[in-house]
Amino acid sequence: MRILFVAPEGVPFSKTGGLGDVIGGLPKELAGLGHEVAVLLPHYRGTKIDAASVHQSLTVPVGPHLRFPSVVGGFLESGVRYFFLDDPEYFDRETLYGGPAGDYPDNPERFAEFSRAAIEFAKLVWRPDVIHCHDWQTALVPVFLRTLYSADPVLARIPCVLTIHNLGYQGLFDRSTLNRIGLPEELFSIDGLEFFGRVNFLKGGMIYTDWLTTVSRRYAEEIQTAEFGCGLEGVIRNKAKRLAGILNGVDYSAWSPENDRFIVARYSASDLGGKKVCKRNLLEEFQLPAGKEDRLLIGIISRFVDQKGFDLVLAAAEQMLKENLQIVALGTGMPEYEEFFRDLAAAHPDQVAVRVAYDNTLAHKIEAGSDLFLMPSRYEPCGLNQIFSLRYGTLPLVRATGGLDDTVEPFDPKTGKGTGFKFQPYEPAALLACLGEALAVYRDMKLWRKLQIEAMSRDFSWKASARRYASLYETAQKDRISEAAESSVSSIGAGCDRVAAPARS
Image (tube, rainbow, N blue to C red; front, side, top):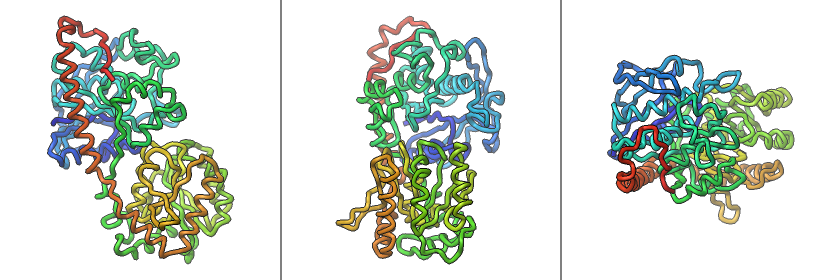
């Protein structure tokens, strides 16, 4: 099968979060299963590619204007062919989606061009059997495909799969956006892109895509509820028969203590000696007191935002620090949380240290050197750091939500088994009680090591998830071909500006 990934970011070329890691891992695993896989990404300023030869010049309408981006790249790496859409005015910028002042105001036009260019790319450069889109930035691909391109007999047989990596980011813009990106006014309706008086890119993609996926089984259930549905729970419930929760995998070639090139000592489940060396090195990196390696060391790597549970951490921090523990934190985010961590470190210099930054090397050191990894998220579609932590024998302490609930097996004091610690109520008291449980286990080093070894044995590589995606693609292709055949008679003579009905759910 020929599979085209259309995404706004992907490792190793561009990344702001977990989506980039998915695009770095899943296509390679699918290629390893024998599929032909191509990835189309924007050519950002920070995208480092060799021999960027032009494969195709495209003409792409964006509202009343024509734009003329080029497709560059086309090289093969790890079995995957990578292409990039080159339009310097839109993508040659310092960051991907916005700067200190907020999101770029022309984001609707930027990603409308990218989405429509992806369809032209599929027609002219690399014809796929299925198109897999990701998040709101590419959610217009199925919208364009089933409206403006609905009369194209070849494209009518190509299914779309849209993955929601985080429902909290939907691509919301004012009503005039439809005209600016060239979509007909008829789509501004409850059955189209209208969302409380605004245009919602992700909603449109959800309605028009053939299949909808998200990044864990539990999150697929949660987003059908008012608590986690972000106003789109009704749309998602209507799509429930074509909704799949497929857990993200991780790339163990990059995230494993046996071969991690960023840590000072490598180790494994059969020999944990190197982990002690990594802990000493981490304390040195953060200038925390030496000779305190017996203290529980908590690691945090995150965006400092409400979603990640930092209001709980703020409320519980002083009580936490009454225990014999230390905390190292790495991340950036909301100014109030950055200031909170700085103030906490200043008030408790022997126990707390923070680095307000993104630092990949330091992230690896935290995973390897910490004893416990803290992720008390309000919601978490999948999460990757808790999966990394399992492999490094750094036991996760998480809230039981989304992918955190799917991947961490809570410690059971009756059996002495588990891979981490979980709490349910979103309350500081629940977090503190869970931490108390972890501290009690940590005092029994024999039991702690047993849990570490159990955690390190878990396999969350892309193998199983890639097979599930391949099966879903085959189902989507079969259904799309059948639907295209059913509608072929009624679509004869339809103009290219026809607004078609969305795929049946």
